[in-house]
Length: 173
Image 1 (cartoon, one colour):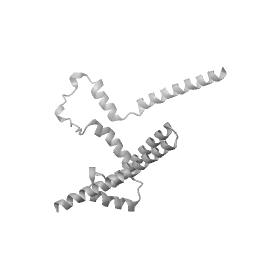
Image 2 (tube, rainbow, N blue to C red):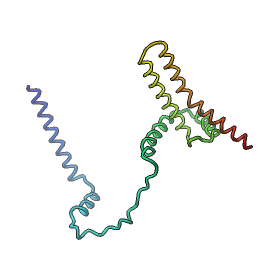
Image 3 (cartoon, rainbow, N blue to C red):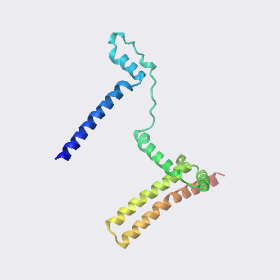
């Protein structure tokens, strides 16, 4: 019973202390620019406000769909982060291969390796899920096969893109 009262007392003091800190922050730490804008829009009477020309406002250009601006942006950030940990010699060879392939989808080397790592992680998750459904030898083999496919697929895709571009160049020349 006394422990409950002590905990309740500490929680009440913490909440009051938090409210005091928030009130102090709002009152004294607010920037002068914010205060000026609040006074302009809230405190001045309506008849003293200057007429605002809406054509002077700069419009923000929003290009692309919501999917491109959110999901693809996030995915690109994750892929670029994962691709930073690729050895330099491997990056140079991959850059050469991407150039031969015609830089499909404007991929850079870190993005490509980030994509490979992300693709492998998806393969691990799928393989683990399949193996968890039934821990038998057949499901283990299926899981390993899926893991192998997810490991090899990005490299095979890049090889296919390289051969396709080389064939196209040979036909033209």
